[in-house]
Image (cartoon, rainbow, N blue to C red):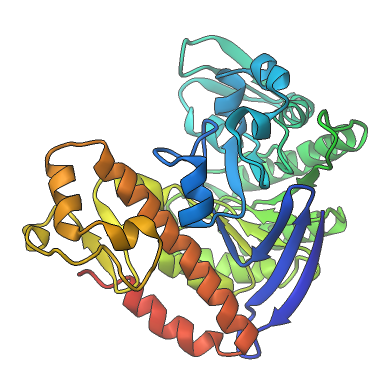
Length: 376
């Protein structure tokens, strides 16, 4: 994998670049739809390509390992062949999912023992094992195995966790560099900066991760409940340390405003379940602001969901009709809403890229943060 830095905004730390993988190029800044169990919920691959115009999607190591399992994925020829997605895929390491299983997991130096949420069976995720699992899944970008600390947490806990995450990273790198991919294309490993919201720990981690010289780097542990201001403070601190010539991925973030503010701080890649999860609950993000499609005010509004956005579902279906689908509990409602919200997120980062290239990002960003977070 290689990264070309194309432009820097003159008034912020925002950048535009291109990530090159064997499954295609990714123009940054980019948002990556989350496909936890091998599918972006309620969205077909054709819609992801044609309407959403996604350039890369995510898979989740924990969920794919448990179901359908490595044997099926290996026989299929990897996740690309299994789900029919022929563009880049990133897999997270399962660290966050294991973190969320706080009642049924034990963290030790060896790795993490946990019980499956499906059948209660016991499993071990070690740094080496997670590298092997992600090799078998077949992602283009593989994430290091780390511990995601909760927020808030004690400094002493965050410090101990960080040291273990760094030791695990060394084991991840050793295993990754001593193995080959299964399917004939190149894969790359991203380390993850941790350290909770403690400045000295974030600096320590960012410096350690930068020293590893990998082809890209990630920032974790900043979408676990902390205030946005702390997220921005830690992100800026870390981005100022991580190499300029490598892509920076902020994991699990977030709202449209979060994405725009973090682009301004130097982040290149984002993912979040928000556009699809909120869509299934009737929250639509639009170029003019946020709609709760269940509200009565949309009952006789026959205008398109978002004419300015473009894309098939956003311009073909009316607000009134989508409201009717939700009230009737028709499956098509959440499907339309999911495709629409993802189309909006991809539109937003594409617009940001164009503004960076034009040198007009800062003024545009200030206006758009207010506009897209307005409640309609």
